Image 1 (cartoon, rainbow, N blue to C red):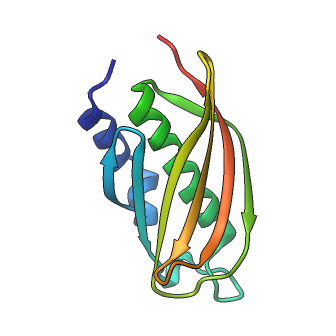
Image 2: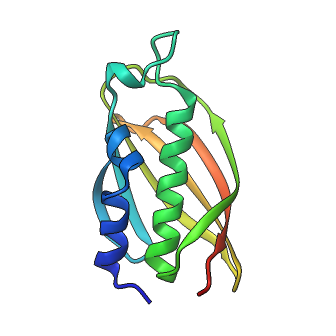
Length: 132
């Protein structure tokens, strides 16, 4: 079983995590929060944050909260994202929580807020635990 710091480091050293510009602002068992400064490179043709960035942020925060709790690697089986408002500047903040945990699967939900607290997106995901 991995230690909590090993779990955190595995995400921080992920090339895709680094490429998108995520920052872990809080990392404890079952309580993980991410920050993402909105940069020009993350905008779509409409000059707003690309929906795939929202989805990636939710996917990351859910995987992180699951791994911080189970200390077990996991993979995304399903991810649903609802988009409520666009973003084109500032920073985004994400957090997640576990809804249901079984031996093989975990379902979690997460949300993305902008700096003033407006919810921009919310998602749920089901993850398969990789038992070794």
